[in-house]
Image (cartoon, rainbow, N blue to C red; front, top):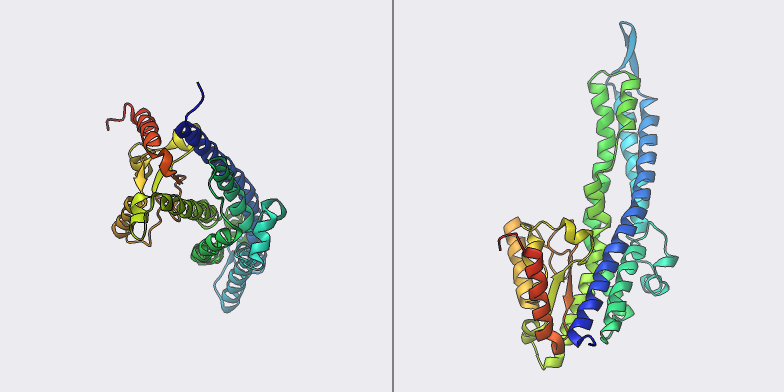
Length: 331
């Protein structure tokens, strides 16, 4: 028996979601190499500073001592670390010739560029919309969504720079204040690391926001076929918050978490917007939501638009899927 239109839609949705999960993991691996290179360079900068710090012989060993020269050297280490991190962030946030960068595809972009990871994800979205016979995002739409996320990423990148540069200088300051030996101070530098959580928030979350923005736009276009106008567009545009149904995201999904509360539900854009606003108020934050960063940092759900012609059937399929997910969890 041939698959129904609703089943074909769900199959295409699952293919996209699992492709997004796969490509997120690929980007994470690529960027971990970059992170390792940055940490290596920061340790080298810190080690160079340790070698210059003044010492004083006390008993049978030489210890680090505070002085004006010490303060000057530590300030130089902090500036050196900031400059090194800044070189990466300038490339990551570059918007020069953005349309051309997107049009050429992620394969021609460097690993340290936002566009490589964003475009890699949006290719899954474009393929999905083509499969369900919807208009795929225009170049202009992708550029606009990318610019929004690049701007949002700036603050996260600045936090990463600040923590990285001050963290290294604080390592030297503590060594000096603690009257450590040069070897002991070097051990502290050798174990210095960039916070992985802050790194992932700065670099892996925002490319996903481009995908969410494009999918939200598609939901509005689909809703227009119902004759909806004005505010009714958002009431008649329906989306599915979902993750790859056979991947790591589903396995690790906490049944009591925020994402699990909405996973595989069919919700209107009105409902999703109200939820995002409520979360932003509750957490005293700018909030995320279906158009940008989802339920919050670290979540992997996307919000998939449903063609109005398939809405009733897809609702039934998602009802069954959600029931299977919640089986044994007491909801």
